[in-house]
Length: 340
Image (tube, helix red, strand yellow):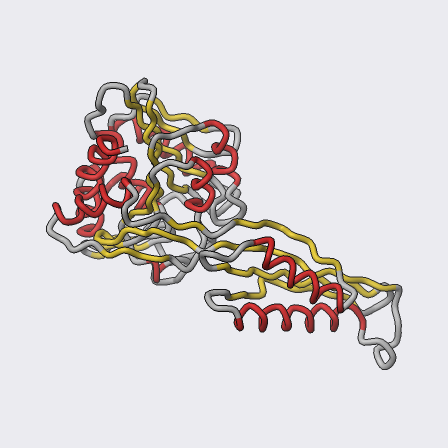
């Protein structure tokens, strides 16, 4: 196993579910200076921030350190590394960390690596960094496959339907729990009827004894061209008809970049340079890429791994693909700085 592969294996070996990233952050801070980074620290939000150079133009490499809970046993089987985070998204993060630490920096440039906390929960790490940077270009590390470049992610609205009353006999009034379930079903049906939209129930709870209460949490996904405000408008109408309160937990707008974006172009050229044919992807999930759009700079998503393995008991990364992704990034990052 090479030292670049050992970095990934060591980081995957430290559990880091959202909210519990501390040990993994300490491990990464200890290891990154061995790969060319001049400093690596943990910020107030629990993200690792590493830096090289002092130029006025910043290349920002944004990944995330946290994972969802669970996952397969961490193990190496031949060339395959198993474990939670190997794909989503410590593989892409380590690839950015290795390449970002060794590429030559042109005059006037600096490079920053952010291993953000909380991406799988509330993106608190990236939200904290947004006002602290004004990058000239940004790459986001998420699994696209060594030959893939992602141009877009859907938006997301997390909302809760809530209701309560003082109590009544169910034969006369079905109560807030029934109202919340029916409203949730109506909202999900409306989402499914709209092109590119989808929805899921994240959780529900209710009590029928005495003061009756209900809460249903929904996750609505929005395609490019849709807006969170528009989604909330029709969801609020459904909630109001059922006498429920609608609370917005989070809202992230969909975002996409053109294939002519300098970050996309640099990655496409680099993929071809490594002997592969680039694939351009429209992702169906939501990522910190959507938040990074606020920087208004060249932007794309890249990283090793098959995203179909995300959050599953089969999560694993082929180390050959990891090495190919390193080759792509070694070519792409200098190209991006030249073109940005």
